[in-house]
Length: 481
Image 1 (cartoon, rainbow, N blue to C red):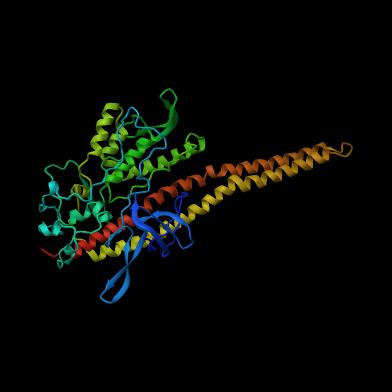
Image 2 (image 1 turned 180 degrees about the vertical axis):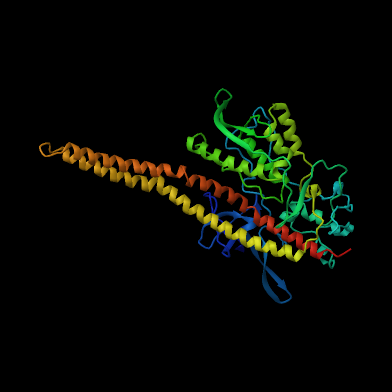
């Protein structure tokens, strides 16, 4: 059954299966059950295709006695929480059309927690003595653990979210706020938040480093049947290079998404089914991998992740497999990741925090629209440089060459110096056309690379903002102890 919906944000399609939607645009949803965070529907222009579930709200009929009105609820959910989509890149496939070869033959699909499984360890409830003096936690009665409407009718007590796939639930924040996460005997990792001049911020990494990505080289296996591109990756703090394929970057990206659900992890450069070994594509991917890696190494939390260190340092095949599986079995994810955080003791006013979130939401939306607009304008200019401008100057050059050839057909009156000058003018215009074609490599390509990174960062903020809003809402509803 089709449903009506309203777009919360503007989304620009990038693939033929997708459709663009505008903020406040009325949509038709064919099926509210999303697939990998995407819904299928139709926009107001009659275009049919896919768009992100977290970008829309479904308009649901609601009856109250004899009065019927309409309320908005996020797409893909029967309740009030937005649908969670980690990334459009989460669907795991490989453009190298290859398994993990001698590195590993196991699947590397991100495994998210089963929403039907109780959040507490072994299903037991336990009060969590978290070290934050400003927030109180409590165990919940047994009846409150049921996912039923009755749980939302217990006065000021916090009921469990009915949408088991919302970002609030999937990230583990709900379980953490409700006190359903027992303390673990040993927590080997920790991430600190400190108060800066502009508010809370991640504590800087004690050992900052950078990482270079160089020398993309085509490699083969199975006697040339399989081909792939290998990159030399060299972290500055070891100065020892390792060689990684795009698939290894993709594995790292998925591990970062799975562990750090409250941090915006920009997507990797796009995958491509054809032309993977063309020189222009290899160079473009290398530039964008460098920008992505620069962001990872400069982030005070992501750069400390054990799986990231394993990616940068491991050179032994056997050790790689062991470290890879250890990272995939990491227990400090979801709700348990919250236990690794050391927060400042300063009290945070919830109203002030909510105002900051609203301000940032407005900024993120405007920034996203502006980046999209600039990307569109720059891409169109690149197209003109490579096509229109180049061809026009070549046509002008050919016209001058034709004039020169015409003068040469009348030897008694032709002037060799004049013919040479006209011919030189024609070649000059042709060279100008080639310069137009080469110019994007010096500026526009680099700008588009940076804009692509910004788009990857901004695309995660709608879910993160919804997550923070839900966390504040739960904190307000929690009764004082």
